Each structure stands twice: as C-alpha cells, then as structure tokens.
Amino acid sequence: MLPEQLSSKVGKSVGEKLRAARTAQNYTQSQLAAPDFSVSYISAIERGQIHPSLRALEILAARLGLSSTQLLPNRSQPEDRQHVSISPFEHDDEIDLQLLEIHLLINQGEAEQAIAQLGRIAVKRLKRPQQLQYRYLLGTAYLHSARLHESEVILLEAVELAKDANEYYYYSRVLNVLGMTYAAMHNYSQAILAHQRCLNLLAEINLCDPLFEAQLYSHLGQHHMQLEHFKQALEMFQQATSLCLQFKEAQVLRTIYLDLSQRYLNEGQHTLAKIYLQKSIFLSDQAIITRLRSDFHYYLGRIMLISSRERAHTYLDATLKQQCIQNDPLARASVLIHYAEWNLIYGALEDAIEYAGQASDLTSSLGDTLIGASVLLTWGHIRYAQQQYDQGDRHFVDGLAMLERLGNAEEMAEQSARYAQLLEKHGKEHEAFTYFRRAFQSRQKLGR
Image 1: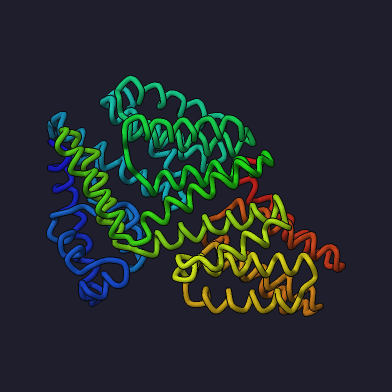
Image 2: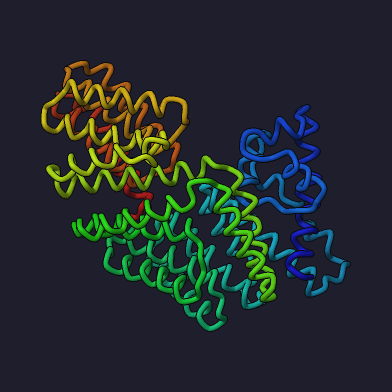
C-alpha cells in the first residue's frame, strides 16, 4: 500500500471517530474548528480525504475531552487474528499505526509508555524506513525519560542508518534530538556539533525548512550561553529572529511546505510529501509561529542582559523602535519586560513598574507563553523590591505554573531556584525548600 493510500485509509478511520465524538457532544464542525482550523479542514478529515497532523489531532482531541490515541483507528485484537492470514502490506499498515500512536504518546509526555510499546514491536520484521523511525522514536522517548546514555546509543545507530539509506528528513531530525541529548548531558560542545551538523545537512540537500532552522539556531544559542560564549549565542539568536521575519505570516510557511510537498511528490518520495503536506495544513494556526517568535526574542533579550548590561540598554532601546517589533505584541512585550528587568537591576523601580505594566497589557490576553511567564516572574521581583511579599508570591506562583504548563523544564528549574533563594533570604525556609525541590525535579526531567 502506497503512503498516500495508507493516509487515506487511516484518515477515514480517524474521521469516523472524530465525527462520532463531535456529534455526541452536539458540536458543529464550525465550533470544533474555531479558532485554530477551518471548517473545510474538519470536513476533509471526517470524509477521510486527509489525515490530521499529530499536533492537530492533539488539539481536536483535547477540545472533545479525549486523548489523541482515542481518535486513532482501533487495531484488531490478537485473538481476532488467530485464523486470519495477514499480508505483508497489512503488517506494514499495522506497524505504521503503532508508530503513529507511539509518536503521539511521546508528544503527550508519556515517554515510558511509548518505550514499553516500542519494546513490543518485533524490530527484525521492520523494513529499513520503519527501523529508522523506530530508533528515532526510541531515542526521543529515552531523552524524555532522562535515559540519556541509551538515547545517545540508539540515536547514533539511527544516524548511520539514515546516512546509508539517504533518508535526509529523519537524518536531520535524529541529529536534532541527538544535540538535545548531548545538551541534557551538559556536553554542550557535542550538542553544538550535532546541531551545526544538522544545519549543514539542510544546506547541503537544499532543504528550505525555515521553522526547523530557526529552532536549530535557538538550540545553538542556548548551548553557547551555557558555555558563556556570549558573542556566538547572540549571533545564533539573531539568526533565529531573522528567520522568523521571513515567515511572519503563517501563509508564507504554508506555501513553503506545500512547495516542498510537491517537490517530494515529483521525486517519488511519498512519505516526505505527506509529512510536508500535513505541516502545511497544520500551519493554519498563526499562534504557533507567534509563540515561537516570542521565545526567540525572549532569549535574545536575555543574552544581552547576561553578557553586557550596558550594551543591553542600547540594544533594547533600538529594538523597541523597530516597526516589526511595534506590530508584534509578544515581541514588543519581550523587549519591554527585559527593559523592566534592566531597570530593576539598576534600582530604577518606577521605570521597572512602568515597563512591566506595558508588557502585562500586551500579554494578558495571549494565554500561556514564555514571555507571559517572564512578565509574571518579573512582577514577583518588583513586588519583593517593594516589600509587598504576598503579592510577589502570587506572581511567582502564577509564573512558575505557566512555565510548568508550557513544559519548559529548563526555565522552570532556573526560575524555581531563583525564587527559592529569594524565599530563603527572607526567612521562609520551609517554602524555599519546596521550590528548591521543584527546581531539582525539573532538572531531573532534563537528565541533570
């Protein structure tokens, strides 16, 4: 069965489940779609014409009060197969569905369950592309379970398999996860090599995937920060934000991914054609790009404050005047909250309050974002500077809760430790211990 035929078969089953769940809750297609998708997109899924991306499946399932795996097709029970002859194609379908379900489990934070399900797959029966995907998923699940040495070993196997098979899509993705694994090991030099190798690969095969490239530059920026290579970190974050300017509107990225889908279809690479078609459909959600761009601005401002507080003021002042920043609420909020932090460091409390207030106005209606969490945490420091400790505590608790919802273990660990030190300084040893423990737990998730 060809990949596009498999997609149609799977899509129909998903569509039937989606329609049943929607009608059971008396939702119209319009109610289910808004605000992330179009009605025609929901209709196409339900008719089995397209298969939703993993993230789209997660969003729709959450909206219906289900887990994403509940929308996947049912697999036949073993006892139902005892007297049924299964063709090689049917076996491939079954494996593809299992790997899809495992991918969803990893995205939902169920790494241990994903590892258990991968352990039940007969690896020797897998075809080469499935073996590559298997190792990629297993390495990713090991990373999320903080089993870092096992992650490194399986991902290095995947690298060799991808090179031999010229599977460049998974080759780049495996290198990305390998870089993240090395970063979790504190081996930032190796992490830089892996992520730089990934960027070189994208250039070598002329694969224009600006969203993925921007994420790679962000990773590199964070690795250089850890090594205190502030100049290189600044360059990496500037590259990431520069790429973001190229896809300010979701439509630009959708067009890029649609073109890539057509390119791979023309080359007969149906799996990659399907992947990029799904990405194109998924990018109907402008909020994804907005949040990503805000994260890059957050790290860019942060590296300026760390590396040179004097230069930071000049940089923030110049950035705030840029038209693209003026027109982007999250990017503007990022600059403003770093301005507030800068003023707080230098004891200009009134100016810090003014800038933090402006940032709050911009982020208050935008949901959970890294910038929004930063705003809340900065207000916590401001209130403590004003000796308004109860208000400060509320801001810290809310900001840390937002980081937890975002799943940002790195920031959660750092900010929990900072808050714990502040509590300890003010004689709240019991509360401080609670947040030191939360910092430790977050670092455990990172394998540290």
